[in-house]
Length: 510
Image (cartoon, rainbow, N blue to C red; front, side):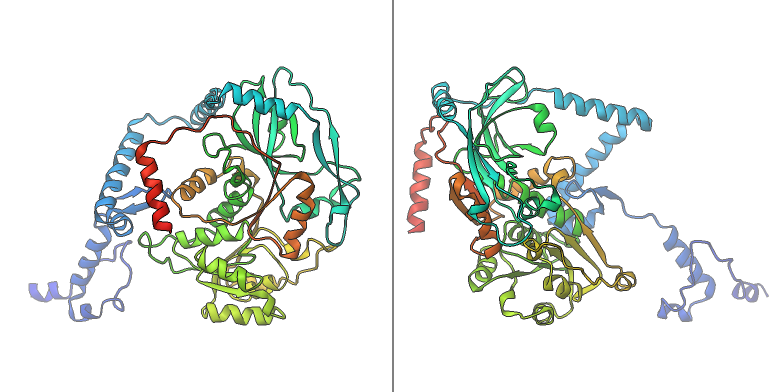
């Protein structure tokens, strides 16, 4: 009788236990009470500990750390994450308001701290300053607004003005390079507020030769969005009104053009659009594919070449679109793209979509939009469910008087859960969001990022450089340098070991 009662016993269902008869085929022959007891134990078993990864701020188990970083390094990073968690837990938790106040106070203290003064040779500095003040400053002006058509040299002029005096709280900035970027085409249209005779303004790289400002010293390098005036006097308030970023200690007199490219606006645009807008999945293990496909239009351009390389660093399959066989070869051989599509061989969006399907039969997960037009139509029609689009630019329409209407089918966004987001890089460039400069400097120093530049010299060459963006005559980032750059430090004598290493490299290159 007792055995019969035990056999017929049915344990009450636990809230954490779900119906699982269909999940476990082997458990069909077991007594019901045994199956429920096993599931209850599984549901209430302790979960494996997770710790925060310093690279992306996401929690992972020890097993996941080891799978991604490898056995030894994964264990080491796991232990470091544990120590960081213990340290954070040991600190007394402040109230939200007190915590916000403390954070603001720490930020203000960091900003108030004077930056490190760069080392300069006083004699060389005096020569560079004499050269900068020895002639008038030159400024590039727009003759009259250009609403439609190709920009040419006849639309711009150069005017000279005396170099202002450096007063208390100001500093003298000598421009080393100025940038030519596609977005500037919109700034010379009357609809965007352009007027006859206005000075041209864009991203520049400059160095400070004289300063009466406590935040800047002679020899400091910086990037900013400023008027194209070869020598200008500014205050910190002037910089606060625009976007600027410090390049001291990162670049020098020999590679300053990178401040207008990979470590400037294009670099921050690529970083922000890829990491913060498209948000690629993390690969199960470093160096392995993450299972996602990225399509980049204008892949050989200043931004596109960087986006593709960031995609490869994260394990994506990367497809690029470029104009002509030479550019297609460059993005594959130099930037590591898996596939290259010559859009000039495609008559319309359908042909481009067919080419895209050859490269990605299952569709694409992410699209970085630089061009618009048929690229948009082809990419949108190739997206997988939960696809993402980062809208950076539409260079195919910049020379038109008005933007063409786009027939975006809203219903096509709902069930596939498509995400489309436009963005501007200024917050990332200024350091208010993310950590673009830290990451891009690290990638560049490790040799993980390659770049191509089209460099022209002289302020009068800027219109030609600007036009090359729309004719396709450029290759990569377009930068205009502003004459000879006098050094501010004497060259350091190389040690014997360094000389031997250089000789060895030259022999290997030969």
